[in-house]
Figure 1 (cartoon, rainbow, N blue to C red):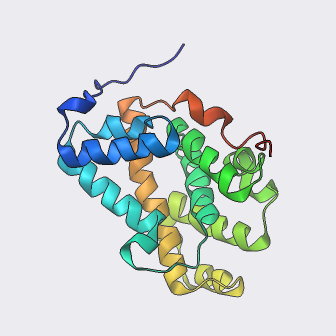
Figure 2 (cartoon, rainbow, N blue to C red):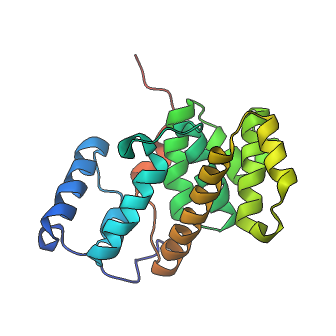
Figure 3 (tube, rainbow, N blue to C red):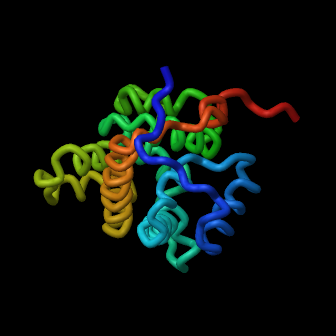
Length: 197
């Protein structure tokens, strides 16, 4: 049985113009409106803050910053740590994006269940080990964790990115869980079957 959201979704036409414009841009690009965009729009000031930080972390080039993490790396962190936080919405939605960026139809399911057995590189495994430690026991992070990342070519700025993405989506996971946010059906099939050329 599909869960219904605990908070009613606002009518797109009642939203402030800046939110409406951004949501319509997303709809144009994706072909649908991901539920998170309407689910959080009931509080416009929080929506703006959420998506400003989201974009700074997930598309740092839009704020003039470079990152040692690929788009696939960032989505892999979100999918893996969201699974640890039992967030269906983020595992399904970001898992879909991960499959597309990595061009691997199995990778999202693998990292969501057990990243240590996933078909990923040693560099990505070290990244996810660090992200999971941030997710589950950030108080235990020490210099050895940074040294492990450095050995795989990550900088201290990359470690900050891994930690910040993990922490930000920890917030997102909890809001999605509390509000009963469900993944859009479109996410389930994205990136699973290669597009025909």
